[in-house]
Amino acid sequence: VYTVLVVLLLASITFPPGLGQFMASRLTMKEYLTSLFDNRTWGSLAPNASEVARPGGLWQEWDHPSATIYGTLSFFLLMKFWMLILATTLPMPAGYFMPIFIYGAAIGRLVGEVVALLFPRGLHSEGPVRPIIPAGYALAGESGVGGHPQGRRDPHPSRPDPPCSP
Image (tube, rainbow, N blue to C red):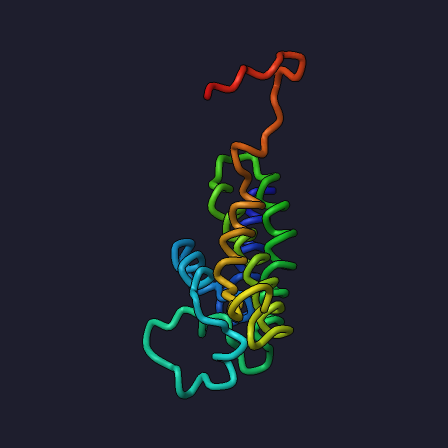
């Protein structure tokens, strides 16, 4: 009974004509990643959506008339946070690998979009101006939340490190 109630709740919330319209819920897992790794800055595309509109533009799933790109990404993160926690309590096997990667990519994308908003011309350190590419932040967020083998701790900390070979 618990499983059916949780699945019904999650399906009702993510239904595209309901709250799902603020979460790009029409996208598949692959389309989520493809859209989050888009090299264009959505914040600059959204005001010109009529000029840029083309069939298959996945970024437009994140653009809603009554919310900004930043609002839909924030709402997506807030909702997915508790929905992922709730889904992990189900007494049945489910795929959590991809949703965690998508969650991390969405965090990175939001950070990248905010940085692009704050520095519209890019960042200048030594040399030419470097543009802000939110997809790079999404990639870093995806790999940071999903985990990385080099970030794991040694299960045997008392063992000495092997010597380095030249």
